[in-house]
Amino acid sequence: MDDPPERHTLVKLIEEAGWDDNGPVVSRTYLADASLWKQFIELWDPILQCTMDAAPDSAGFECIGDRLQVRIVDDEALGNKCPDDVAFAHRLCEDDDDSEEVGFLEPGLRTRMCLFVDQECMESVTAPRADALLFVKAVSVRLGTTRWPEQAFVSKVAIESLITEVYPALLLPEISVTELRPIMDGDA
Image 1: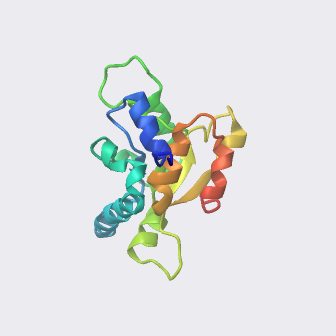
Image 2 (image 1 turned 60 degrees about the vertical axis):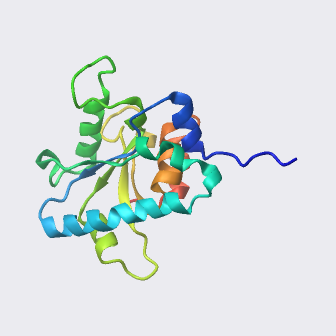
Image 3 (image 1 turned 30 degrees about the vertical axis):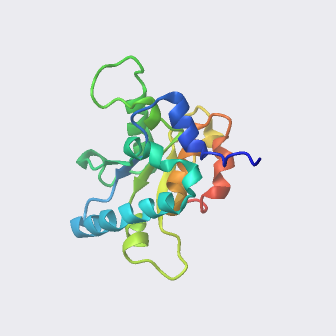
């Protein structure tokens, strides 16, 4: 008798941890064009959904679908900020594990890199070139610190790999941040 197909790594992780609040956090840093942002968001959700829909039923995404979503941070304070500032803002949200204050990240939202969307990312989705990558950017949460400088970098992340490959890898401590670079498309 064949073994049952294995559930996706992300599904197993969320189920084992019992997290209710999961998903990557994406910050908007380009605020100058509201219509471009609106177009990006309208196209972004279907791209993400397609990647989960394309996974085999045995992956188990339907079991975590209501607990998994991308959190968008659309705050004027991040407007025109550089990757160092995005990483700093993310670190501020992670710093106090014991805080009851709103705004601190739940365990399923804490990752070693955070994501942001600038004008280049928005245009990759709203006006894609043939065979071009649709992407957001990932920044190591350690960027701008002297701690682990070898792991501090910014990289483009294919939206189609965000939920199924990148987000689970960012949660797993046994995968080094530098090992993630092959599933990302070069430096931003």
